[in-house]
Length: 221
Ligand code: ADP
Image 1: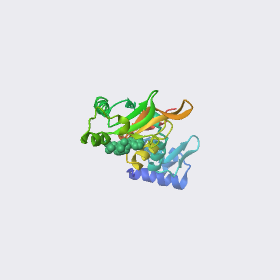
Image 2 (image 1 turned 90 degrees about the vertical axis):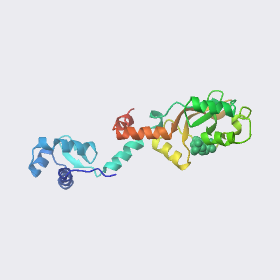
Image 3 (image 1 turned 30 degrees about the horizontal axis):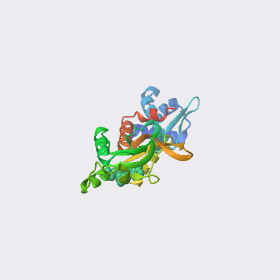
Image 4 (image 1 turned 45 degrees about the vertical axis):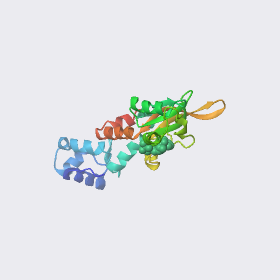
């Protein structure tokens, strides 16, 4: 990504690269302008991460491009700060029940859970379309017959980076990832569904990034 810098900003960077650390006053003198005139330029260059200002020392060049700074910030974003409420149905449901739930909950993918919200399966729109196209009674077919089941489910965790979760969506060509936490049920390691990350989640994060809100959110403890 390239950000268009003005000629003056380019000149400031060149001066800091050659002579930094250097104070704002000194840069202003070299360019023949006042410190006040340069203030917005210096503010932008430090905010973007290209320059860093150290009190009593002056400005120095970080060597970081705007895009590497942006990528650093994106990597800090966690699934836990963006995940949505999961859309789940019981593993006792019929195919018909799940089709209804898909419409009522207005989602494209539903997670199938057993008692205690334990992840058993995933069902997508196309899984349901495929079975509904056959000559079968969808009221009688248990959803467990149709779902993609454990242990073949790709999931994410609250502490995983949103970028890693997005990469899983791309790599596995799926629309949604359950957010899970490990639990022990009757001595067995299981996964409890506590959220979801979908392509919409990633799109929302992207829009926030464009609106310049994301960086603050990423810095939240
Ligand atoms: P659609 O099938 O409606 O295009 P997806 O691309 O998300 O939706 O699903 C493709 C296939 O992958 C479906 O058979 C679905 O059951 C399965 N699937 C969806 N999400 C996951 C997941 N998180 N882990 C494993 N399989 C999944």
